[in-house]
Structure formats: structure tokens, C-alpha cells
Length: 480
Image (tube, rainbow, N blue to C red; front, side, top):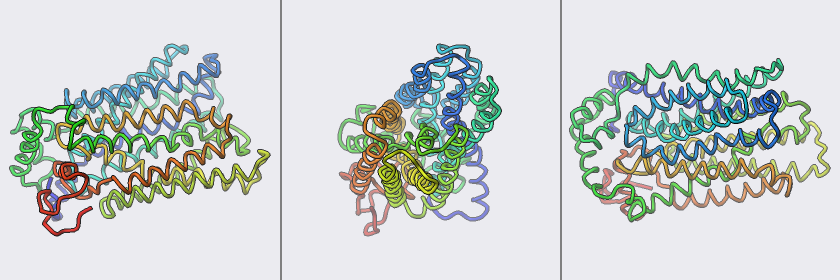
């Protein structure tokens, strides 16, 4: 889409066109974050209420991750088959249904099943939402809009922690049902809105519906050169014809596949969900007295994370993708080392207030660095790295890798802490973060301001931007 400066009138038109898309994305991001934030508090209650053993609680908690992995694997195929818009409707309907059935569960089997299918919905959303946003807003605001999805995810985590802490204080046996079920409300309200949004021009062009694609492009970006951009989409589709998903495993896009899969794995294996999912347990290990206090401290960490992701959203389309990502990883590494240092300093397990504050600061820095870098850029690179017909499959590959790493962290962090000590586990995460920083420095492309269908030139040129103007940049202009 056009990257030319927009006048005031055009900005208003673009804001109207992108407003509905943005609202849909932020609502789904809010639900996604809320579910991540409330499960820790809910697990403290539903285990007792349903008479579940510790192992059964762990199985129920992990069910959503298994569903997410399957949803991410299928997400690219679904988004390509039914369209970006219908995939978004499926996500909203899935959230509404499975949040409600989670709240109404009567035993381990019904709760596990509901959480698994909720995970399947989340996995699809991780593919559908960034695809829908990337193909529905102008390039000039694409980065900020994608990061806004992460902003709402962090706000959702805060709300989940706050509601969990508040309801835990009330100590009613049904409170966990409210925690798990309330997210169905915004999902239900979102469905009528999604029915009115336009399908993305990119997907319509993939299906040969050029007239509809042109009409929808005009609704999305009134400043665009409609015929030129539609023709560029068609040329890209023609260039890619005949390969399908197998193109991802051949040059030139094999390099892109390796990049997104490796980056996706680094995003989670560096330990962010160890601090989110097990945040209350980590704070209790630092000397925090009660479950409620530990949940409130976890919510406090996310407030700092929210400030960081808001900063990332403001500057991502100014600074570029690489500086934001590398700065975030560096901050995250410092937080991991600080958390490890606090654990080393208190060998007897007795923490004073200063050490608790330092431990809080360490976990806060981990989350600040993550949402500023990894958390913001995962949605950007997932939707930008591949051209046209491969975009859904590339997004699916990246998010599947991300979720596999998440599953590893969720399954083994507590056991690793018990076996080796919290300090060594955090040092291990810090080493992995440094490896991720080196990987990003060497291989991550800078895609700021580039049209979606131009990014393929980076991979076709062996992992660097052409300087002859073939990628839409004038010859001699500085590229990264």
C-alpha cells in the first residue's frame, strides 16, 4: 500500500477504514492476554473445587498449549482456505464458546477438553490476527497496529491478574468459573463487528477476485494507487505460481523459513512464559507470604511491561524493526542476569525486603525487554517475512515454532528449578537470550516502511536488500 505522506483528509479516511480492523485486533489481543493472566489464579481454585491432584491441574493447564500448537499448525491452511475475515470470525466464536464451556466444566475431562479447544482457537488467532492486520492497514502504520495487538495482550494479562487476585480474596468456590468465563463477553460483542469488515485485498487477489480486491483496497487506503498496487499483487502471485508450501523449503524462501522458525523458537525458549505462567510461584519463592500478594506482584510486573510495549508501538515505525528488537533482547538479558544474581546472593533461601525488590526488578526487566522487542516484533515479522501466497504458511511456521518452545518452557521450568536451582535456570535463559541477540544482529531484515510484496526481494537477493532499485528503493539509497 502507499507509503506517501498523507494529508489531513486522507488520514481521517484511513483512520476510519483501519479503525474497525484495529478494534477487532485489540479486542482479540485483550482476550488472549486475559486468558494468559488469569489461569494461574484460577488454577489455585479449580484444583480444590474439582478435587484435582497437582498432576491433574498441570495437565489441565498444559492442555491449552497443546491446542495452541495444533491451532498454529493448521492456522495458515485455514486462513488461506476460508479467508482472513472468516478466520477472524471463527476465532471470536471459538473464544466465546470455549471460555463459556471452561466456566461450566464439572470435572477434569470437561475442563481439559474446553481448554484444549480454547488453545486451538488461540493458535488460529496467532496466525489470523497479524495476517488480517498486515493486509488491511497502510504500510505507514502497519508496525504500530501490529504492536497494538501486543499492547492489548499485556493489558489483558494485567486484567487477568487483577481479577484473579480480587476474586481470590473473596474465596468463593465458584470464583474460578467467573475468571475463565468472563472473556466470552467481549468475544460475543465482537462477532457482529467482524461480519461488517472487508476481506483483505491480498486474499481476494489470491482467489482471483480482482474487482472486489480493488474495492476493498479503496476502503482500506484511500491514498493508494489502486490499479498499480492491485497489479503488483497480481505480479507477485504470478511470480509465485506453481510452488505452494513447498516453496518455503527451496531457495530463495528457505532462508526466510529458517529465519522465522529460529526466531520463533528463540522468542519463547528464552523464558518469558516462565515469568508469566509461574510468576506467582517465583514471587513466593522470593519470600512473598500469600498467594494473593504474589498475584498482585505479577500484575505489577505487567504494568511496567505495558509501559515498555507502548514505547515500542510509538517508535517501531520510526526506529525500525532491528533496533527495537535488539534493544529489547538486551534489556531482557539484563533482567535474567539480575534475577539469577539475586538468587545466588541468597543461598539460604531467606529474602529480605531489598532482595525481594531486586527480584521484582529483575522479573520486571525480563518482561519489559520481552514486550519491547520479542513480544512486539513476533507479530510484525510473522506477517511481513513472506510474500503473498506464502504469508499464511510462514506465519504458521513461525508461531508453531514459538509455541513448541513455549511448551518446553511450561513443561520443564519448575522441574529444572527444583533440580538445578532458580539461579542456574535463569543463567541458562540469559545465555539463550544472548544467542538470540547474535542471531537477530546477523540475520534479521529491516522491513520498516516497505510494501509487503516488496519484502521478497530481501530473500531473493540472498539476505540483503538490492541496491539497484528493484525493491522499490532508489538506487544508492541506504538499505539494511
